[in-house]
Image (cartoon, rainbow, N blue to C red; front, side, top):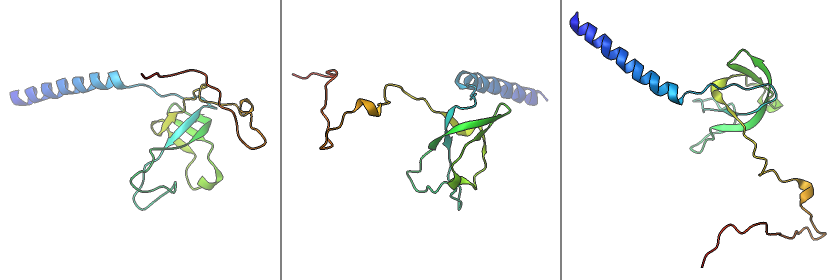
Length: 131
């Protein structure tokens, strides 16, 4: 009985260590309606829902918009008609929020194209110098 008590104490200490590590790295994911998310896909043996296969299989595919929130952990996405066989409701664990960087967005009106379909490059800043 004493050995069983010792083993149970070891289990408790191991569980508390694991819980402390997971609590530090854990973050609650919560999305809102009209948020854009990436959909995580994993290749299933013999079934290719998303038409992707091979070594360089992407973890996430296209960004989709959330159209309905079902509870705290399930979301309904607006998928394209080609993916009609895929269920519309997904768990929060296979979604990743799309972070849009406004610096990377280039307005089409800002680029002036000539009749020869060329444009003039204008330097904005010098990023590096070398002697």
